[in-house]
Length: 401
Image 1 (spheres, rainbow, N blue to C red):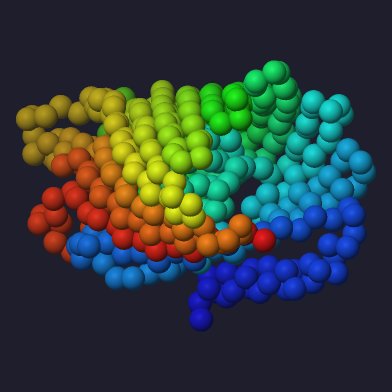
Image 2 (image 1 turned 135 degrees about the horizontal axis):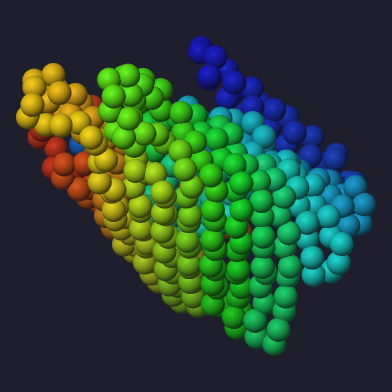
């Protein structure tokens, strides 16, 4: 067994041991123990590419997980929350996902500090809790892992309630230091000055809405690109070298709406990412989802789209003067193209069966279509024969306890 597998197995055993002892611990009024898990199997229909880790053979390792959450009330208005996750996906670390202190200075105010979920999207807080949403895989155009899931810092939340409207306003500040993944790359990333706000609420008990804004300074360590930039700088092409620096500032805008009725549901969410860095393209994504409820079954259909607006390559390398300069020019263009995101469309058809109040079974198929010339998919075989289209088939079991 490799070290990575042993680490995940240890985390899973730890979660299991805590779960077994929960009956004794739960007798304390100060202690609350809960958890969730999911078993997800999937495969694609193309042997030449992979998408989000899935290939052309059935696999359970990409999204299967087990989690345990412990809330301990130190005082009437002070508590500690910790969430432990054991992942089967080698691209995600098992261990402490959340660890923060909560303080309620007033009935309508909540202050938190520590390691918390980054509140980018509507389902950010429950993104690992598959039981909380209809899909097996939430629309990847928004919920892909190229953004970071956690941050360390503080947040202040004010709750309000009116006649037909209730909700909250949240402000937060913090930082992140770790790896981020985009497409087939995983890079060390530093996020400083992370700040933002979230406005969310419910109208007439069935219409949910959310709007958020996030900004931060970022730096991504792209070792190979940095080495090439140093080479460009050494021969005098400073502008080209500077354009390959993966650091700057980003802004994220998000808006979402969801309507829940007894026999149907509708949802829409939109997101835009803007950056002042040439290597980081601006991205705009959204999805539209609709579902019909035939208790205990829900059938849902989702269309999602991600459109990128890549910035122009800023090179001062002349083309056509010498063979060496031409080679350097095309090398720059290749490096620049490798960092760009790809447009991606998808259509998902799925069904959910709520077999009990704490267990749900799901099945879905998603058709993905990428942009020709720039790929969202990782090549495994004959790339030239691939038409940037793939189907992903998935089965899942979701549970909470």
